Image (cartoon, rainbow, N blue to C red; front, side, top):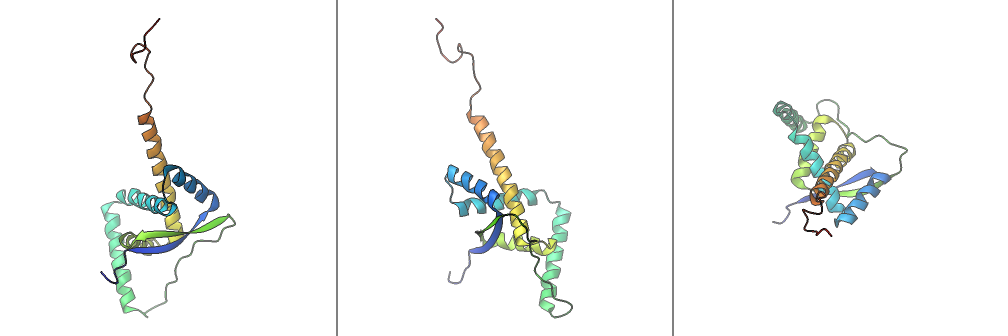
Length: 159
């Protein structure tokens, strides 16, 4: 298995406030921050891409194939620059995002079709994954808390 790359490392710039919230939940729930961030990005991606219409996926696939083909031909026409996230005055922190190679490849294909930066896409997916995670946690807590029953039903004796 020499030379097999299983993971890809990207840098992700997050608002310090968002990172603090995510770090607090990760710590409270017993996650390593890097694993939690990876989970949230993948959850956001799955939620997004499950909703894509098959036609949209087919168009995306065709655009990606055309991009690969034009890359092979190379040198014909202007070169494309990598899209960057716009600079912001917001307080931000850079963190490492370690993704499985297959997931990273899917995200890069999506990036090529949509023409957005890695940071914008991953930040959006992270936020969506975080919302899904928190909603799931809320639903789990609701299911764990038993509804209050009258004292006659819970075995308590009346005087």
